Each structure stands twice: as C-alpha cells, then as structure tokens.
Length: 160
Image 1 (cartoon, helix red, strand yellow):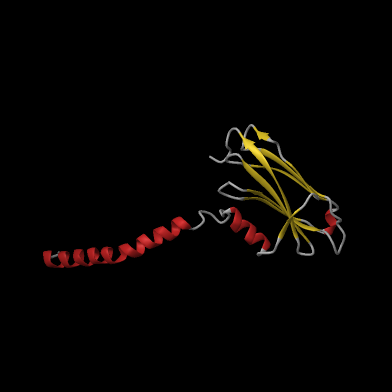
Image 2 (tube, rainbow, N blue to C red):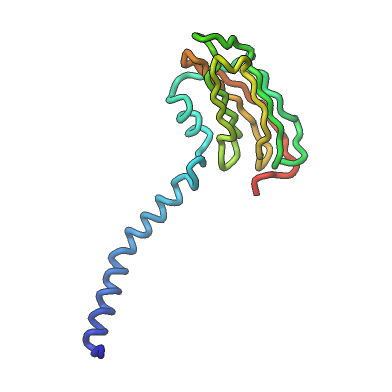
C-alpha cells in the first residue's frame, strides 16, 4: 500500500525532472524544426553543394533540357535530358541530376552513366509543387560540372 508521503515524494521527483528537462526538449524541438524533414529534403544550395562538393559549375549549351513551358498537372511533368558529349572510356558523362529549385525535395532524379551507355540521355516524369525552374546538372568523368535550367509554369501543383 502506497503511503501519502511516498506518493508525494515520487510526484515531486517527476515534476522536478519535467521542469529540468523542459529547456532541453525545447532546444531539441527547435533543432528538429531546422533540420531537413527527410533524407532528401534540402534547399537547392545544399543539394548543389552535396552533388558538386563545392566545385565550380558552368552553364552549358551542350545540354538539351526538354520540359513543357506550362504543365497542366504538376504531378506528372515530363523531363528529357540529352547531353552532346562523347561517351568514350576516358571522357564521358558520369551523371545527370534533375533538380526542382522550389520543391521540398529538390533532388528529383540522379542517373549514373558509364561509357558503355552509348549516349548521355535520360527521360522521366517529376513532380512540381508550383511554378519553378527545373535544372539539369551534369557531371563529366573528368570531374567538371555543367548545367542548364528552364522554367515550368505549373497550373495545378503536384506535391500536396
């Protein structure tokens, strides 16, 4: 049988622990709010830095990015990327990254290629939450990065 004195002692310990832990819980909640909400949710700048490791990026007309000017439905926006670049053993396109600047999940697709691929080409459909730029970021086997971007006007958002 619990005596009133032991109950009040236990209650005091619980209250003291809750009060002492509150600032730590508030700080943890603030840090969680600042952190990305998923493994792929980053800002555009964070995604670029993660892909390029801080290397310079050049805008290039060697990349043919095909996206619609107006997307009726942002849930299924077609994207085609062709890179006019040799696919030789020592000089080829290593990766094509598709990014949507304003989406919660900026990185839409990452495609890794080999010289055996024959052609640096990729096509898919992506989701766009609102009107924004779609970016094709291309990495060469020599470690250089080139990119191009096009704006897509979205009439019905596809991300929620």
